[in-house]
Image 1 (tube, rainbow, N blue to C red):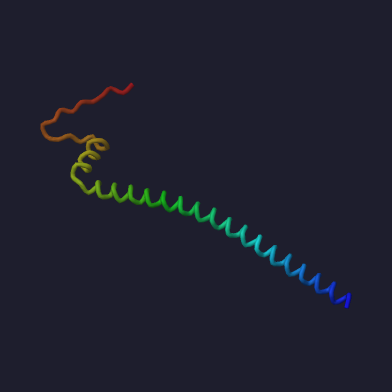
Image 2 (cartoon, rainbow, N blue to C red; image 1 turned 45 degrees about the horizontal axis):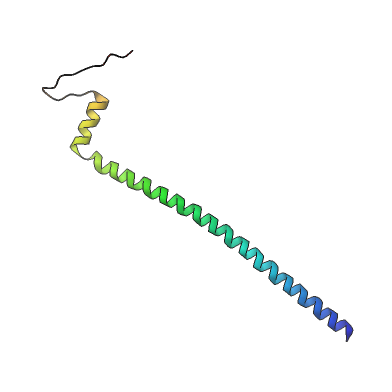
Length: 90
């Protein structure tokens, strides 16, 4: 009788230790996944903002005023009747 009682106690302790280990490891995994999810949400927000910015730029680039502005700045174009003013570079 004495041996069965000890074996039973050892078996119960082993099962409780295994359950405790499993629960702790699952909690660690859940915490790591939450941190990863937060990082991915931040990246998603940044990508969404960048996407919206690019969509706005694309929409703006189709307007005549934007094309005119780029032609004036990059290609140094002027309209008819305007006087060109050049700045002296040092």
